[in-house]
Image (cartoon, rainbow, N blue to C red; front, side, top):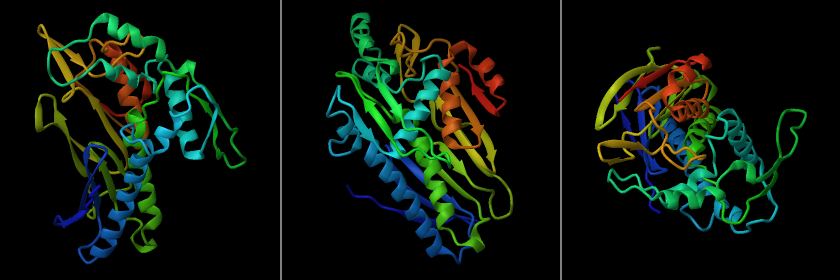
Length: 315
């Protein structure tokens, strides 16, 4: 696969661009114009990490970790520390959501195609998949944490016919990882310079722009691609949006969101058009935004309970 990096000076910061995870990606660096080579090096650090994570967990490849995990259904397999951390995070999310955030629900895409058309699956087709969905059917045993809180791995059994889908957390995780590696790679004299990683709207930020002003972030308006419904300020932490602006079905005047309830197999009803959440990290922001959408009409009440800043765009 041909991969490229683009780097341009934007007046007060370096803007790096690349493509990954089916999204345009950006790295904004509040470095002086004289630090072009450093900016290029940090851009490569970020892009390499995002591409690495995409390669490991993409369900579209046959030569990666994801494929290997699914090649031996019904058998206990050893997983590494990184995968164990992701599985532990997914299990916590599943418990927090009473089963509505479920990494095994990706199978529903076999019958749901959110292409803007009016083609709904039959109730029978949806019902036929439900027995193969449900985190509780996995046998996942994480190693105990060590003295420093680190986990070395775990044992996973995926029953025959089931499938994991890391798409619900992968991009947010990659944004946090890319930012973290950039902070490790940047020389000490520039460590206070703000870095913003943007993976298709999932953001991780280490600090403000060079003038100590926050980065300005647009949140796309539903049904108006390229137009911003919100203009937010971000100086540190994560920011993520969950919504149905691009993936939906429209049948008999009713809009069906791509957010599916894994318990029923059908789209969540009465959810906002989009929810944006700010949290200490991008993966936390993304999880809370997704859980709010899955709460449907109770999204606002759920968000109030979290105490995190949030923005809702209603229908």
